[in-house]
Length: 313
Length: 313
Image (cartoon, rainbow over all chains, first blue to last red):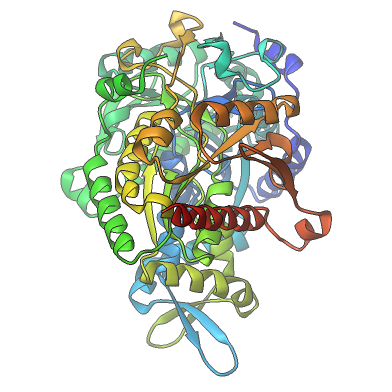
C-alpha cells in the first residue's frame, strides 16, 4: 500500500481546491471565535476514474442519505456543520423532495399584470418547516457546503478540513459517513483515452488506497472526537472489523451497519463497549429517521468527552 | 462476446420490469391510435455491479444532459416521448434547477391564519415557462418516464420498449443517447459480498456486453428511424468509428461527439454523408443549447424518411 504522504505527493489537488480551502478556513475561524461546537460530516461515495479523460469510473454505492440527514440533526443540536459531500449526492433539506415533487407542488396563477407561482396549500404544511430550517441555517451561516467527486478530491479536502478543525481541539467532531473507495488506479497506470471495446475485454488492476484514518486520528486532529463508519454486507464481519479499526486507529467510535438493514439498525462500537440502536416498526412508520437517535447519541458522547477533557486540565 | 439471446437467458429482469412493461404498452397503444410520432430517448449512464450485494460498481460518465434536453425539444415538435433514463440522472424541465436553486427562489409569508410559500417575483420570469411546459407535457400525457440503473436493467427495458414501438413502423424514432457500458461482469463471476481491502488489491476481469444495436435495428424495430450516439475522447477515431457502426448495424444516423467539446459541437454521420453541427460563441452565450438544432435536424430527417416510405407503398 502507498504511504499516505506519497499519495499526496503523487496526486495533484483538484482545480477548485484553493477556493474550498479558503471557504473552510473562513468558516472555521468564525465559529472557533464564537466557541461553537463543529462537525465535519462527510457524505456520499467517491469515484475512481479508469481513464484520464474520464468516461468510466468505479463508484461506491451511496446516495448520501446518512450524511445529509445527520447534518440536519447536528444543526438542531447547534453544531456548525461542514457538509463535505459527493457532487450531486443528497443534501440536507433539499433531500426531502425530488425535482418532480417540487414541480408538482406548484401552482401557476395568471392575472392581468403578471404570473405568480405558489406552493399548493395542501403541500405547505409539509414543505414550510423544511424550508424554514434551510433558510435559518443559511442566514446564520451554520452550514458550509463543499463537494468532491473522485477519491483524490476527497483526500485533499479531508486533510484541508482537518487543518482548519485542529484549532477546535475537543470541540470538533469528525463524522466520516462518506463511502470512500478502498481501491484506486494510480495516475501513472491509467490510460489517457477511453478504453476501446474492439480491443477485447479489459482487466482492471486496482491498488489499495492508504487508510487516512491513521494520520487523521494521530496527527491531523489528535484531540477531536472522531467517528468512523463501517458498511458490510456480511453481518458476521461487522463487530470484528469495527473493533479492528478502533484498535488500529485509536479513535473514539465506529458506527457499524449492514447494507440491507442500515436504515433501521446500526451498532455503536466503542473501545470498551458495543450496543445496538434500532428503530421499531412503529417509529419507522411514523417517519422517524434513525439518524436522529444516532446523532443524539454522538452529541451526548461528545459532550461527555469535552467534560472529561476539561476535568483533566 | 456473449450472444444477445444468451444475455437475456442468463440475466433476470429487474424487479419493477413488469410494471414498466405495462406502462410502456399503455403509452404506446394510446399514441399509436392517435397516429402520433413517437421517440424513445435513452439517457444517462448504466452501472456494472462488481458484487451481488452491490457496494461497488463501474459507472459511465453521463449526467443525462443530452437526453433530458433533447426530450424537451422532441415535445416541442409534438412527439410522444418515452424518457428512459438512469435513476436520479437529469430529467426534462426539472434539470434547469438544482434543489438549492429551488429553495432559494422561494419566499415564506406568514399571516395570522397560515403560511404561504411563493416563488420570488424576480425568479418567476425564468421559472414560469419551464413549469408551464412541464405541466402541459404531464396533463396531455405526452411523456412517459421509465428508469434503469444497471446495464442489465437497461437491456430489459430497451427490448420491452422496442416490442411496443414496432407497431409504429416508420413513425418511431429511437434516439439512443444513454452511455451504455461496453463491459460487465456476468452473474456467475461476481462475488456475493463486499470485496475486502484486507485481501489485497483486486483485479477485475470484465466481459464484453453484446451489441444490442444489431438485433434492435434488424429484428425488433426494423422500420423505425434509429439514431445512435458515439462518444470518444480521441477526435481521430470519431468519424471512422461512426462509419463502422453504420456499416455494421445498417441504421440511419450516428451522432458523434468528443467528450471535451460535446456541448457545442457534434458530427452527424449518415450512410452517405457527414457534416458538423455547432454552436457559435454568441449562440452559446445567449443560452442556446445544441440539442435544439440536433433535434430539429433529426425531426427533419425523420419526416423525409416517413415521406419516402409512403411513396414506396
